[in-house]
Image 1 (tube, helix red, strand yellow):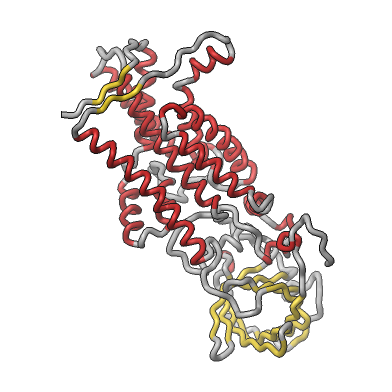
Image 2 (image 1 turned 180 degrees about the vertical axis):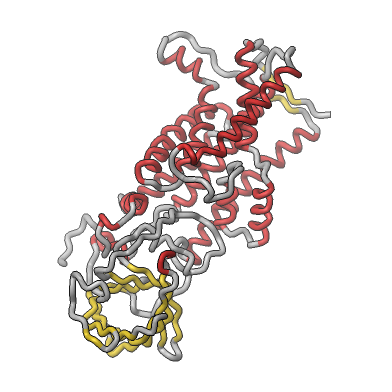
Length: 453
């Protein structure tokens, strides 16, 4: 029969400590341990999909949810409605627990295992975010369309994502390594406080950025920050005595002793499963990013067309419209991305897609809206190519204009000219002559190298 005991701690607790622990145990157990059937449904989905990194990453972002997604605001106190339910359950459970366990003197064993649960819960979350930053998935570099959009036409979250993603070629991966390091430190008892402190400092910045730039991950970053603070709290008295009062502080000498048996085997299995999951997530993320360009569309665009084009001639419904800064129907310029996306600038006021970035799988190229979301300066179209008939089928990627479609014949008389002719869903005809502009971008050429523009 297995035994699991803690050595080095036989202190009797005060009554308020007992009551506080009962509340904290129920609260954090509900928050951290996957009790929802949705988690296990997502787990089987990940297995069935061949371990897509988006599905694996989704498992690491688990939080208990009592209200349907999208039914409550993502900002303000309403965003924390699920937390309110957990707090009520924890308060009621703590009262009942204290009635039936009033003679208890301490919860040292329970406290240790709660911290184990929270250590691994926080570690898997920050390591997962570290991995997607390591491969520049969370904050990808700007596209050609982004480089031809005025800064003020981006929503706050998009401006933050682009400026952070291009701060340096190594900045985002460095942030990822910090998160991974913090997560690894949580896996060892002697470095828990160091890891939790590093993560807490990092998450404070993340939480403030989420609120300042309306990124949409306010609740989740606050959730992880609370766990980090709880882990730090254990060593706070010793650190306060040592660093502030400059008194002698004894080291934490508590450690579990688990003899052979079911508990020992379960411990090995769970630790092994954790390591395997992290390795699988890392390999899947690298492979997925290289394979399908996530978060950008997977399919390739028109061969050799990538670049920025001036709209030299624009004829709408057989009427030529000269270049104009006020004509909302006249296209001014067009961008062909490397993948199957076209973006168009015109004086027309665009109602932006207010979606915030999500890492989810099984998205079609049309549904991968990271490039178009948060951009109020350009219209984005996903397109399919019929190379046999030289035809492009365009679909507006903005959810506010999803009915807009174009079917255009393309002709390429020379290497820098593309001629588009066709109609939209309203049978409006268009004839467009595009001239490619050979632009050099400091981000691509190297900002520290002199170039001629």
